[in-house]
Image (cartoon, rainbow, N blue to C red; front, side, top):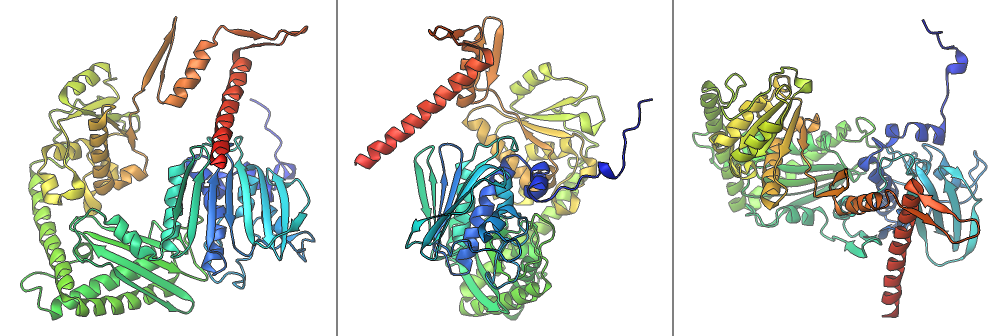
Length: 606
């Protein structure tokens, strides 16, 4: 028996501040993958947006630099630089190096902010290889640099300026994150969202790596947001229903419009944070919507022999944004995905009921069309229930009667089994030949499956391929009947061809899972097979690669396999293997920088 390791008071390590963040980064930013990486940008931009919400900032610029760093610039008040009374150092340094330090706690500097429950810029600093901050304030410019969260230089004044604001440049630490490759699309999506939620705020995003630049400014705010989401769809009410109100420093804003689809797209935000789990503001809106429309339907004698539609019926085809600005938000959990302020629910409900009632009275044609759509949804729901019962009796929705085209596996251990959904019967035959019969099942689907986004439940249940899919997976579908305990396979792998048709089928399958079995996505049961784009072969060595960048790296790696580079000096330097590979990587990076600077030079000449 091995000696028991000493365990006493000396074994207890207390992590404080920056050290704790670097030791356990996922506790502060969720993970150290792509999501956590982009959360750093969101935190810094969030501070600038808080300035905008307070009425102090009109313009924000976000730039993804060619060296992998990020710049965020605003024209707000600038972070204070005078000495902090308790800490005896500049307030800027306190904000950048101390957890839970900032101007959002007393409610004096910011009436509303999204950062109180956030991780703050100090965590961004801690998880960056380096960070530089410039503050323009009170006619002066101040600069300070940090490395891995620690102060590197003292606060330095660098001349006079008429401008004001804060500029932060930081480079994520590659020793912390799985990847430091920033996605323009991810950053752009959030920037665009923030521009919609803060009408009149101008946010500019620049990607120096690809010479891309876009500016987002929406004077119509969330009203334009709803119009954008319904673009290309047949709308029920032509004009977006919009209202806003303020009470006890709580600001409520709502925009909504119906389309002829069957999917509810209602998004809620609190202090610019996407509350994906909803909360009191969403509950208040939903209650008011159902109550208002049922009251109107009853008073206008639109129900006749029909039952009053349910809340789900009234939300079919609804696109809506509910945004609240709350001085002291109570979020459930560090991730801020659900708002908990009880007073917000009553306020949103009263405001929505008042404005929707007025809208119905002033726009009877649209109101009748909305109620009529809900009645159709109610009747379709009842028809779907009957269709589901009939289909279940035939065994198509239960795992007890498995589809004939399914080549099942022999193991009953859910954790170790995989279901491969393949495109076409012929592909199914090939997949069967290469599978492990014990753990891998193959389900070939014929042709393009039904787009469930544009079909009601009863039509979906009459589709043979959809029924086959439901039966093979075994969980059932929908909010009321989905049971994850009945899942027959731990991994469900979508394996379509690497072409346009394959991408289309993959999208339709993902849409089905997202609408009918979303918990499988949340639980991490859905996978997409990624076919390689290239095969590289040299002598006995061969590799499969999945993209152009990886192709370039593999070509270099294989090409220099047995190569040696030697300088012509008296004491020659020899490079081979990993050293040569690293050297070539640096040359490639220099070539990339040179190309970028030459482009900039040409642009400046013009």
